[in-house]
Length: 298
Image: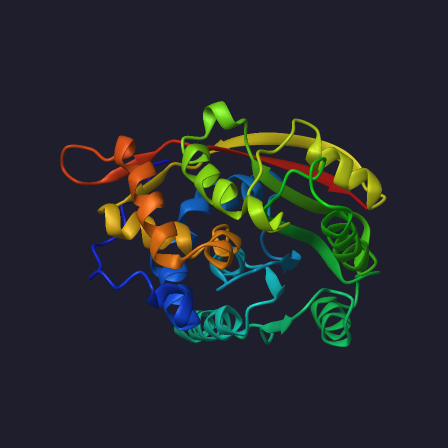
């Protein structure tokens, strides 16, 4: 699959990244979100997502993965903790359905975890007369932290979200978990370690950690799921220039703890320095990465 470099953007003062969440949302949508498209496509192809699929996206962000599933004919809904991203996801999905001129089911998106009334309503709306339960596929594409090293609260929250989601999923339905591949195969790991190092004084649970080999399996087991296959997908991060790379990475939230512990300007400076080895002669930034996904069954 060919990855596409994002277009050049005008630089913004680094201090504005934290001051205006709207800038972060735009940077995520315009720069960073597309980096995981190969992961979305590989999973959807493997699960044959299409007409008849009723999909719930956990951590759906601004909706690109949901948009891709809807384009394949799936009925989709999603949940996220960021209201700005959800608003954009709703706009994109509604516009896409209207542009196709299709009689599509209403897009259902909401804040928080899936253990809420709106998700239960979405599950009922997504189910047709022949279905015995709501969702046939649940995705958690947002890369999970290293659960073996994460604080208990972080693991408990992940298990709780998955348990609530699977309660709304038909028996035999697929739950997809995703995470970073081995650090030695992820060029971005060296950059993410900058945030982890700067956040260390706070012992922040949100900081990045490398994933362990069996982290996804452990999470599935705790959530009462049965592993049913896994895979690895190349997801290179490509940026038009250094500024776009810094802005895209900061939009992930993986550096938020570092910014709280130190200073946004300092974090942006150190991220840029860590990116220099990955900058090519033409100014573009290219970092090969591998992501891993696990398919588990309810």
